[in-house]
Image: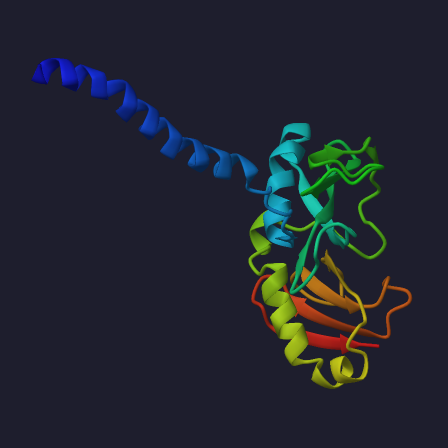
Length: 206
């Protein structure tokens, strides 16, 4: 009789167990997806670099630029997308890559995307290629330095957008982050240069 009762209880126990697990499974399925998060310039660079290295073994970066996306929050040196121009001295060509955390339309696709390569004459404006090892300071670190040097400007213009550009020019011995207050380099009236190798403050430009 005891054995018979035991076997009769098994279906009820299984049903109870199943009911308790069902809400947990449903809760897990209903969890909203995490919103896309912005990334630093150095992080985005190292997502693009393997693809660029596959294009040319002698590849070197010449310019890194931040890209703001309306669907991804921006702040403290982090952006939804970044663009890097790589060059191959041996090929005499340059190639632009982008890294985006979302599908953003146009030439900005989620992950790494490459544009067709172009002729390279040895420089991009004043910018020259630099060694990958020279990029030691990330954009969020450059941002902290720039903010410390821009307290008065930020008080006057607290809502001014910020963009980043990294280049090696004759002005400094190392590649430098240019932290730019404004929509573009040309329209900006306040920029801070930070050494991308040492993290040192270099200059303020207006």
